[in-house]
Length: 216
Figure 1 (cartoon, rainbow, N blue to C red):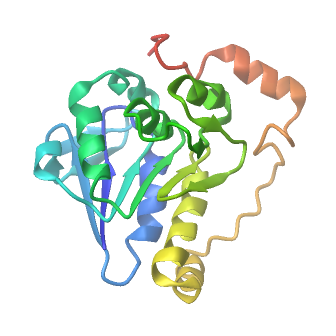
Figure 2 (figure 1 turned 90 degrees about the horizontal axis):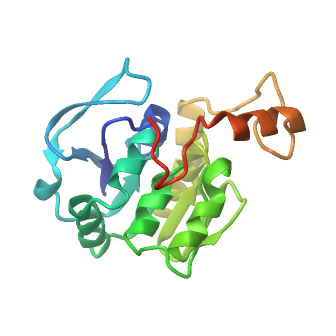
């Protein structure tokens, strides 16, 4: 089971590391981090780096492809090298997946046209611009394509995938090993439960910039 996780400058670390912690525990799993070039890749916080073992051209196939989101995704939305690579690897996969705004990269590559997909709640409408059908669900499966909503939803996605790949018993064991039993101290984890004024203040903050609008 070869899992390839795409890295790029200013990716969101949990988008990649959360699923990695689950998928890497599947028996027989091989996980490869790939980027524009091998070496350290800096996450959006600026204080964490993950190491890409391979350049894009060195990775031509995968059983499972995972694309994380992050502010750096915007610069890749029209990048032919990355979009061509996504299409080429997708042709070999059993599962093509994303977390957060990573689904917009899949959509920009034309892979989600006519398919249901999700992303971070602040970017959901942007999926429709690329022919996808936006969903408000935390994890969405449409054929071999599986997308997760914002950041922490990648852990849920990875557990769903583990169950489908290795069986429910393995997924349950992995969940227990990592003790994934979230009990957050606040109920503001979704737009349905957060205070309306908090939702609106975040919408107005510009912390997440929609594709094609620029920003840092």
